[in-house]
Image (cartoon, rainbow over all chains, first blue to last red; front, side):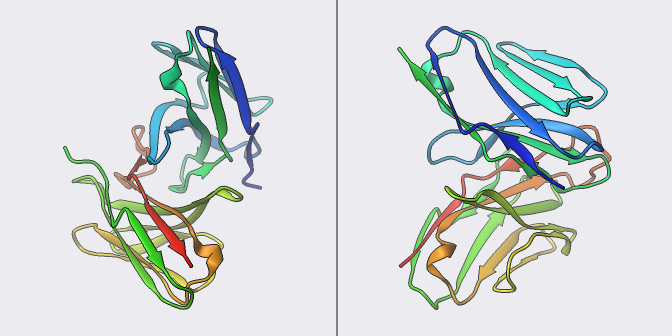
Length: 111
Length: 116
């Protein structure tokens, strides 16, 4: 199937780390993405990782990929109020142009 | 360079009417994909156009259609609108070659359609 699953909500305290998890079903998925959507806006690509990588770090963002378990996570260090948004995990197979999105995780920040 | 432009930003239509939404991709991008976003169903893939041809299609009824012009601009049309068509319609553009390592989507801000 083409399912990408995420938990719907995550609440963290400002300054803590946020970890958003995602599982996917297609073992041939080669590219995995994280997108961010702020209220009233489209989706913004945050980062992506190839399936031959285990980890990718970009400033406050760390992506971990466990290909055996088909599990992807996004860690946001030192979470700020501006990180409040919906985060979408997405997958794509190498030869396919269609990207399949998860349902999104709404991240809320408490003081 | 300019981003992905979707027009209009907001639309209100009545049941039974039809609607046309427009998307101008990033210059040089040849692929345009359309998604429907609703609170209940999340992001649902509608279709993708590449070089004026539909390359992929999602599971939507025939009331939903699209096309792409030679300048890569795309339109999607929904006929005989139903209340359930109320959603945010997002357009995404990409270079179009999925074998490229920098392949990815750039999204527009969307068109919010309300059917009353």
